[in-house]
Image (cartoon, rainbow, N blue to C red; front, side, top):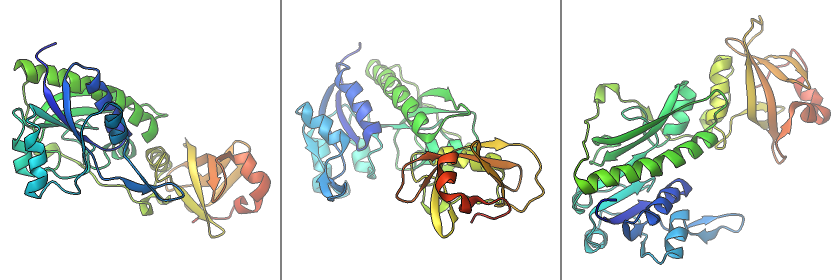
Length: 315
């Protein structure tokens, strides 16, 4: 490989930890790790370190957990590490201009989309919901904008009909580290070429909310099926029946006319619960009532058949 780089890594969730793990095996020197402060988690609300912090401490790497990088004393933490480059993956804090300029080669970010498509917080989910045929990762030179920096490297992968956000997450968590290491090689030997993004082609991936996970039967069956896959594993699509929320984990599209109002139950049997939509029928196959485990349609019908009488409507 080219010369070893002194790297600051900034990231928080498991997706970021997978990139840090690749760096630790690469021959580059990770001189410090920035991650979000420990957060309450679990039933006991116990303060829990991020996956990135856990991995960094296993390798005895200095860990910094400022609540913000705007104060000058926190920026001084970055400056003191004298890094060649700062790698940012799902960190969760804004990097102000002084920090972006501190490393010799600046700051680079791994983003889970093919920029300029799906800038923002939820690129994997939004690509799925939109029905895109492919996605990927982009490694970019960071600037002060929201995922607007010049692109250094892209790797694409197809979005398959059965993909969920969970499966795409795993695919991109494999592609990202590979693309990151290739980009660092190019930065180290001076061969990296930065491509300016075309802002006219940009789309925005807004953060997901639990409210938009509620199934809207005024959409088509295709749109709803994509929504279900996009919101798996969080926040999980759901409908209301008998004033009870029921999560939907898996469904399929039945492309046929039905003549019923959207939300009307067409049929319910061991093959699924068929619901009329604005265009086509959604056949719900795996569900989860509140406080229960995920189950097939027949299992739920065995205990709650009165919920799914043909002709009744779901909210």
